[in-house]
Amino acid sequence: QKEVEQDPGPLSVPEGAIVSLNCTYSNSAFQYFMWYRQYSRKGPELLMYTYSSGNKEDGRFTAQVDKSSKYISLFIRDSQPSDSATYLCAMSRGGSQGNLIFGKGTKLSVKP
Amino acid sequence: DAGVTQSPTHLIKTRGQQVTLRCSPKSGHDTVSWYQQALGQGPQFIFQYYEEEERQRGNFPDRFSGHQFPNYSSELNVNALLLGDSALYLCASSSGQGALGYTFGSGTRLTVV
Image (cartoon, rainbow over all chains, first blue to last red; front, side, top):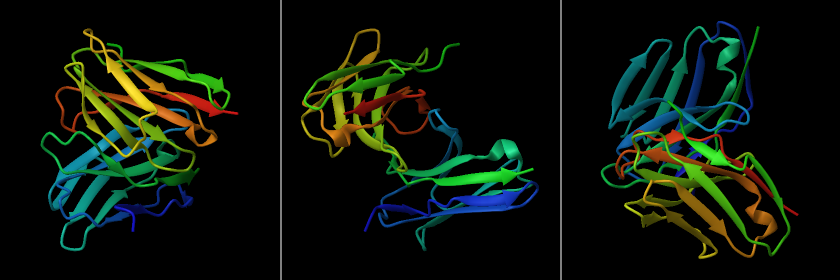
């Protein structure tokens, strides 16, 4: 079993739709949970991070972490064509542990 | 303010050859981490350099080695290239050793033929 599982999609939605992206994980030592966005031929850029369980909202984006179920989600409201990208979940044990464990990424396409 | 700069952007090498990839961190960052991203996969951690030393290493063979210079820039070296080493190599810089606050470069696309 991989440490982090993420459905690679692809996922295609109409503009304005609510998008739900998810990851599951197996290592209960993970404390930091992140979502990165990666455009084609670019490096990943951090969208949001959450420490431990709970919700975090930033504009149209909401991140949720359920440590009891080892399940994290990213919701995108009022999706835009500019949101079309690959979304990667990533996790870390925190502290001085410098390595991130990434999911495979979900490729999202938002159609006008 | 320049972000993370990687060179070259693309590279084609033959099996068995050696390659060196370069990374200049974002201004103010002192730590450099390297990741390998195969096609259709998420990035995988190779190693992290801080204070010119390799501090953490992922599950990669000794063919992968690196260096960090006093100006915090870094090199990734791969010896005896295999076809399976074809990937996007990403450099991420940060302040300190933690995994928060990463800024990624756009990567070097390495193709091994």
